[in-house]
Image (cartoon, rainbow, N blue to C red; front, side, top):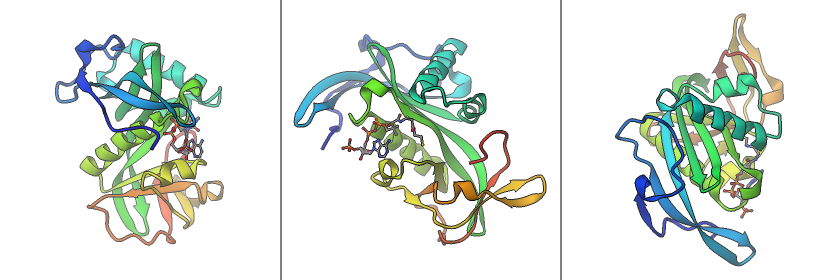
Length: 224
Ligand SMILES: CC(C)(COP(=O)(O)OP(=O)(O)OC[C@H]1O[C@@H](n2cnc3c(N)ncnc32)[C@H](O)[C@@H]1OP(=O)(O)O)[C@@H](O)C(=O)NCCC(=O)NCCS
């Protein structure tokens, strides 16, 4: 097992690595934890990191700039202004250490038609871990927290990826059926996205035929 459950937890004020948003809602406290992170095969260290979450509108402009810079670096220049717009307007979950952001993911609400069921889904965006911290289990921590939020708020989780095995181990399933966007002229095929869509079922998910059509709502930039 690469990353343990928490071995110690305390409130944010006790942690030196507490850089973060200017304001937040009180029901979303940050949690400072010691995680057991893998250094190399068979060797582990205990890292003090803070797992935190807040809605975009609770985050300061300065912190949002830090998140954007972090994503630009983590995606090696492939993160566009449209990608940044897609990552905002919902919840952000992040891990921060003594030297800044370690990992991040966003959850935004979208309306999708999944095998004829129209649903408000929790759509995951902007998942990234800093290059120096990859394969230590931090992305898994972010995705587990996003999964909890999806189960609490939505009927279904959806995302688009090329890194299927990362998400499969966390309960996400590939949607093998054809993909569409509900565009200005009706449902249009998005064949380049076929096979890249994954879903996370929740106890409130209807029975879904994953060989059926999946249709996303329209947006600028990459629609999936
Ligand atoms: C994908 C990414 C977020 C994973 O973050 P991470 O912190 O390294 O993930 P974890 O350490 O929790 O990985 C857990 C497991 O997922 C799998 N995994 C990790 N990265 C993967 C990748 N890029 N592709 C496929 N599987 C991956 C591995 O099985 C890993 O376990 P292992 O290290 O024991 O082999 C990170 O590689 C990243 O930021 N990539 C660049 C941005 C990106 O592509 N984001 C995803 C967009 S959909």
